[in-house]
Length: 340
Image 1: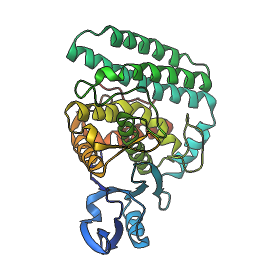
Image 2 (image 1 turned 90 degrees about the vertical axis):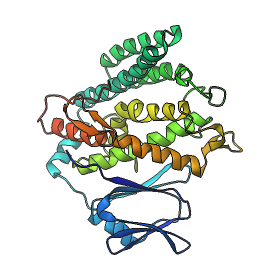
Image 3 (image 1 turned 45 degrees about the vertical axis):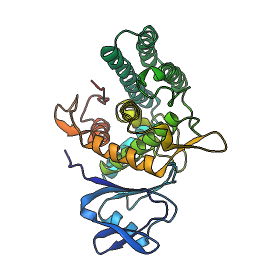
C-alpha cells in the first residue's frame, strides 16, 4: 500500500503558486507566504483565480502531483494533467467494458448499493447512540428495501430512479442526525447549485474534495477518471471518479459534516447568505473544514476487504486499486467499500 502524503490546500483567493528549485512557493502580491518541497506533497488544491506558473505546473507533472483549481466557493474548475501514465492495456480494457451494458450495470449497482448501505449504517449508528426513533427506524427499513430494488434493477434508468428515491429517503431524516445547534442548522433536503442552507454548502464542498481525491487515485493506478460506467460522458467531467465516490460519500463526507456541527467546530456565523438566498462559507470556515478534513484523512481504519490498516485518506486509492484488479480479471468481482 502506498504512503499517504500531504495535500496542500491554498485557501487565499489572491495567492499565486510558483516554483523555486524543487519547492512549491505560495505568494500574495509577490510576497512569499509559504513554501514546501514538492517531494512532501501528494496533491495541491487551490481556491482562487490567480493561478500558477507554467514552471510550477511542470514541477507537479514531473513529480506526479495532482494540481486542481477550485473557485473560492469550492466549485471545481479544472485539474492539470500531465502525460498519461499507467498500463495502456488496462485503459483499453476499461473503455471496452464501459460499452458492455451488463458490466456497466453490474458495477453501477455495486457503487449505489454501497452508497445506500453506508447511509443506512449512519442511521443505525444514530439509533445505537441515541435510542429509538420511529421516523429514523422507518427510513432504515426503507433503505434496506431500496437496496434490494437496486440489485434487481433491469437497466440504468431504473437504477438511477431507485438511487434518487433512496437518497431522498435518507436526507428526509438528516435533520435528526444534528444533535446540537439544531436551530442554527436546518436541513430541508439536498440542493446543490446554489446551496440553500449551510449544511448543503458544506456537503457540496466536501463531496468535491472526495471527487478530486478519487480522480487522482484513479490516475495513479492507471485508470481513466473521465470514462465511467454509470455517469454519462461529458467533456471535463470525471465520470468514473463520480461513480466510485458514491460508496464513500457517507463515510468520508456526511460523517465529517455532522461531526463538525455537533462538536460546534463551526457555527452559523461561519456562513454568508448571498442575495440569491444561497449560502457560502467564509474563508475561516473553509480553512477550519480543510484542517479537520486533513486530520480525518490521517485516522487509521482496517479496510474491510484488504484486512489491513490504512489511513482513511487512502480509501480512494484502495478502491481504485481494487477496481483495476477487477478489470484485469485478478478479482472475480469488485469489492465495494462497506463501512462498519
